[in-house]
Amino acid sequence: MRPTILLTRPEDGAERFVQQLRDRFGDIPVVFSPLLRIEPTGPQPDLTPYRGVIVTSANGVPNGAIGVPCHVVGQATAQAARAAGLDVQTVEAEAQALIRRILADRVAGPLLHLRGEHARGDIAQTLTNAGIQADEAVVYAQKECPLTPEAQAVLDGKSPVLVPLFSPRTARIFAAQRPQAPVAIAAMSPAVAQALGDVPVKLLEIAATPDANAMLDATQRLMDALA
Image 1: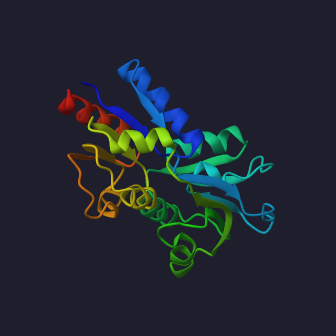
Image 2: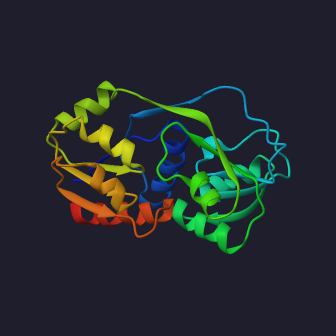
């Protein structure tokens, strides 16, 4: 029996990922129940004092910043930044690798990190301490959402549920639901897996690298194990 896939990402990211899933696995049962809702926190900050921006999520990509040098985490963020007209100069899979690359390339500051209310790692302060002036601006909030009735029913059932989790915060929110169904988790990183705490998990796969392709591979391994 094929598991139901429960996608808890915000809507735009979930739709992209489910299309990638269906391209690989065909027609599979999917339930959408975003556990976070993205909301802007206010007007976009003035970018003119800065020689570039750092963006660690597609949600932080600024509008009207044509040609502004941009340093990003993740291919999806890079794609969104290019679509918005930014000059993407650096792409790394995770934040610490991006910091190392910016330092190694001696990128000229000042830089501005456009981030959400909840973020792991202090990119701006780390760069400033290392000699590259950087500031940060919170440009979006990630608001918690309850499970949909359909998602709650799936997690209360007896059939296997496969849940890809992309951030530690989403993992903590998911764990708080205390699922009763046999759950298989594809975690984007060890930090995501750790954030699950003691929630009962039937199977766990951690993506080899923190990106969509590796998450698809982790999901594939779980699908094979549950077949």
